[in-house]
Image 1 (tube, helix red, strand yellow):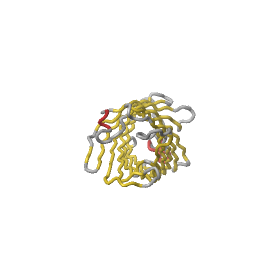
Image 2: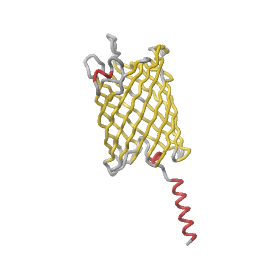
Image 3: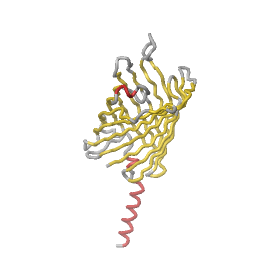
Image 4: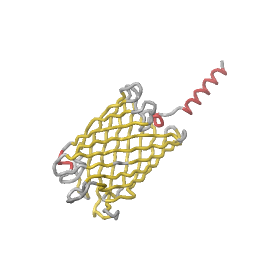
Length: 277
């Protein structure tokens, strides 16, 4: 009897050592099971004192400009096969220009659909969100806080495990901003992301990421300009995720716009909370 108990205890220990935590199992590519819910709050602070011109030369702004965006996203699993999730996203944003600041306001809201297009490829998924602008002209006047545009954001996710400790994650997006007023222009970005993650334990992951994000359209206010690449940036960053409870995850990250043309030259600080139920 004692031997049976010891063998059972040993099997439980071995199973716990090799079992995946929710941090390892539910990567951004993986969908929720039927009835599961995900609540995610992602706080993004972008701050800059310089921008770069069409030659990539840094130009001093003479003040610090900062934008804090608080994104809340909810997803719900509606498929037994983990192939379809539905939900919504909403954003609250505030901005600072030197000593002047905007109000904290709801800037957008809209539905989200996430699905696995190939049943045998559960680590390959697509997420699409359509956002409606809120607060209209207050988003851009008198201070620019966020885009007063309709936004269609489609993300393609794929992750690949090198081994039990190392994971590679790829993301390709189409961020399309439709004009909401006649004086605006329509443009889109195609951000490309690569993230390498390392799991020292099942509750902790450390990662590094690189993103290249070109924007295509016509430069606003410039006559006789052809459609093409208006601007772009490349950012490089580091981050960490920690599993406080089996269903509660915290994330911290930092990145810097190391290269850009006609775009920002600042830094990004992120703090995220994800709860699975």
